[in-house]
Length: 121
Image 1 (cartoon, rainbow, N blue to C red):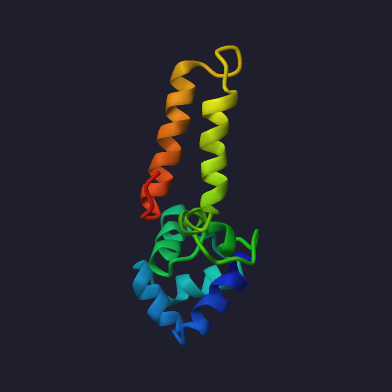
Image 2 (image 1 turned 90 degrees about the vertical axis):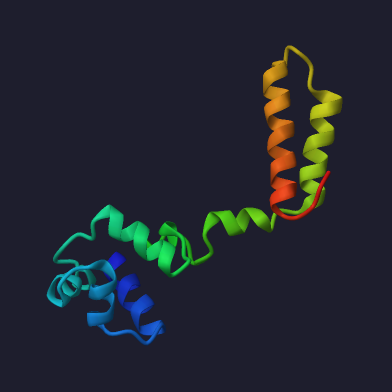
């Protein structure tokens, strides 16, 4: 599965095996073995490919058809959902449900998420 994704990724970018090998700092023959499954791609190379091509590791392994990395997926969370979560924490959280530090941590998480998206609460 990974080999097929590597080939698909390479061909969609109009790259040759030599180009991919150079990117990963391996010989072309070694890269060819990654595509055919005769050799396992090292974890650092998987991460490098995901970073360089801005795709998720899950996509590389065929676990999702969405190539978008999770960080970008998170940015698309509906703002109303985040606000509802923040309101729920303010209204429903009681000491027996959430500790003070948990409430604070979750509020901060929501604030960070909104700021990351360029919106303040």
